[in-house]
Length: 306
Image: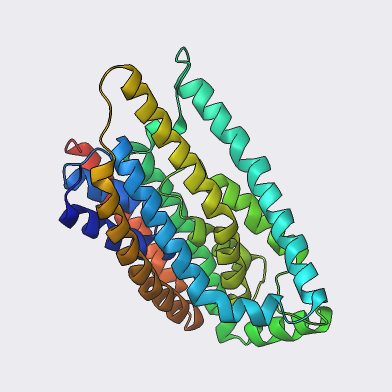
């Protein structure tokens, strides 16, 4: 059973990194390794399920008033949102799950029960994903910053107002690209979901606030599915251990996981305020610089044996 202190450390790391565009999975895996924990153990899977739940609720609490104004003011606005969210989510599945299947059938060739989660703790795979996410965030952030300095942001909002009768939503094309790149994030820990989707939204000329709102609305749709997958994996591991005559004691981890969920909730709220502030003030590119530096650090940790 992971100690309470270690769970609380992971909760803060998860809460901050999950909602900042820096990849929570990369940071949590590195933190687990530095703390001497096994990221693939069923006990840690239970903890991560609860931490993801905490950050999901922080997203709902933080964005609810914005979503209500943007998506639920009229039936027309709600319909626009549902169509775009459904379209983006379908593309996430169309892009992401075939890649997962390909990886599982190539990386685990000859093994009937290979799952992509078994690769999640490999720092040599996380580092290049962080590098790719950092470059995407850096390019989109610098481009968006340059456009804002030349008044393009104001013109962009005027254009969007001219084509949107009510509600504040991304366009159908913007939603599609954000959903597709979200699919690329599913198999690769280190390739930040929020960083990639918001960056692609900005590169597709979505206004800052609309890209952010829609990105995290997609997260709330996707997170329960991710939690269910992790929970299923944990139950399978517990069942296999029971059949082998070595039942796992998950009960001792429940209280620590619940406390971790609370801490990840409050850390998530702090992270969202930070993200919104930097996004609105043209500092988005700084997250890209951080991801590039983190990639180098993760490469180094892999090199020295973590």
